[in-house]
Length: 543
Picture 1 (cartoon, rainbow, N blue to C red):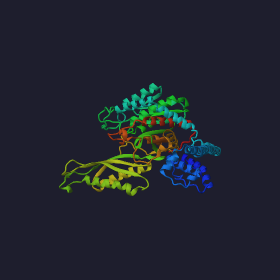
Picture 2 (spheres, rainbow, N blue to C red; picture 1 turned 180 degrees about the vertical axis):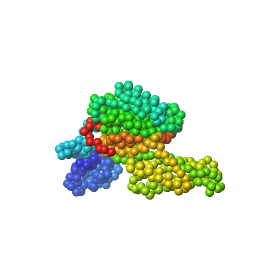
Picture 3 (cartoon, helix red, strand yellow; picture 1 turned 45 degrees about the vertical axis):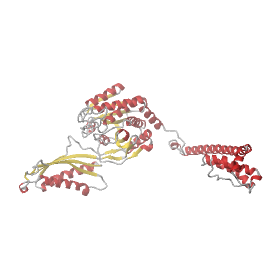
Picture 4 (tube, rainbow, N blue to C red; picture 1 turned 135 degrees about the vertical axis):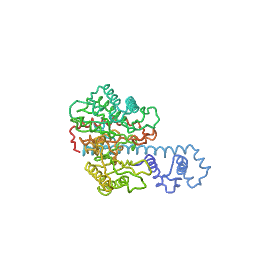
């Protein structure tokens, strides 16, 4: 049953020729092996052999070019070949093929019936021996959503939205035009919303208006970066750029709004759409939570584009995905003086230098090597003359870890090290953790059940083979405030595409987005919200 066509035909010819060889041991040997024959060889050499076999007077005669040509030119040779070799071989091969195909059908069908009888809830979703199984209701619904998202008019609309937002970037808590565009599109779709939240945020809702509630989130703010990409829709605002894909996030969530609005009769609850300001260091999520944006929401999902993965690849992981982070600034005061007579000064440069080295010991000597932590000093400002010891030095940086306990331990030790090192060097220091302008971000922790839900939906949208478990990274994201308050899941959707230049990381002036990611993100947003509501009985775990 495993043979291909050539093997079956070879076997058929063998069935016919073998009895002839057994019946007449004095027959001349076939001129070529059945394992290596081809059609041209068979028509030429075997015709001669068959004719010589059927004519005893020619069996022992030498084979010459002349005799071969005479034999091949004889009509009786061709007729003999057709009647006694080709026709029977063809009929036998045909019957073998039909029998094998019928046997395979019966065998495969019996396997499917046996499997479905033994495990009826599993068989329908697992392909058996290449036989397509009926897709589940969730797979069919996700497929329908993806098809809606990929309609040409939908894709064109998503691109226009994203490009319009890209041309007019706005920094944290200044997203007034972006907010206005969002509200305008929601009005056109007939979707109700509330605003402002945290200055410029917008919160819309689709569905029954009652529980259960599930939230989808997109950030809106740009970065203080001058765009270096020359294209038709380059930023029109000097020194500002959507260099992290937040313009795409807004377009995706508006796309999800349109998809959900078209399918709202199938929603068994309410989808809350959160358009959030000030993700880039402004902790806009924290302010929105403080203003009551979550209400009765039971779960939340977020998406971020990533240049690390090709377009169409989706990645995340359960548990810790992104680190929590904080910032610090310290001013170490000494006594300035001439560099030629340092004994008359109190040198804050030496005190600050010792501080930088001591801070690194907090990770290497005091933290568990199995618990990732980072302390990076990124600012060191201490004077502007080559021959003058400054009176003070300013240093600052960031610290990161994957648990809140580690974050607060590091914070405490940073302050102690800076203060004590300054004291050892006869200086004094002031430490500021900038919590007003840059609040601590908790780690982004994916809830196990929400991760599994999103993972399954992503598999329905892009294919299970395109959903990856990715390693955690030390970057931070203020979606963590939402995931810290209620169960949530955060996923990356790949947008790397060398052909369109989408290869640069976020926060790069050369950042380019592959816009083919837009319908994928919109479909995933809509599908995960719909699936959550349809599985309202799901038991959510606490963070």
